[in-house]
Length: 181
Image (cartoon, rainbow, N blue to C red; front, side, top):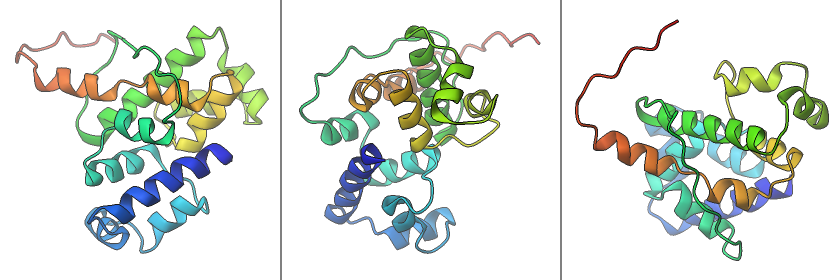
């Protein structure tokens, strides 16, 4: 997919310019040797949480990264959702990405089963990805974004995971009401 090639090229260039080495990332996170290179070549799927871990190692936020990927794109208004549920670490960012993807689908008037047919996935596959029962990858995001007639720039530049993380850091310490089942 051409969109992923652009993202991978910018990520590879950022890694080259930084002092962060792919082998060091792999050792630090317990990943297989050569896996980062395989992800960037598109040989294997890059899971969203690992993408965020690479950005964290580069000390680059998602919005900053995607402004580099899509420098000519018109920057859309950032997403604002009150339903963001705070979690720890990379799961927090991946959850944000899942919620943003779900919001984009709904706001464009699409149904998940319609997207699954359009992309060629089996029934209920997208719902398992969005629910976190299957890993979310950048290729999943790109496939869905194209299926709902958004550009990757529109989708990724409206992503607001840093805002969600910043709000968590300024938490007033009050316990949240438990979610009822």
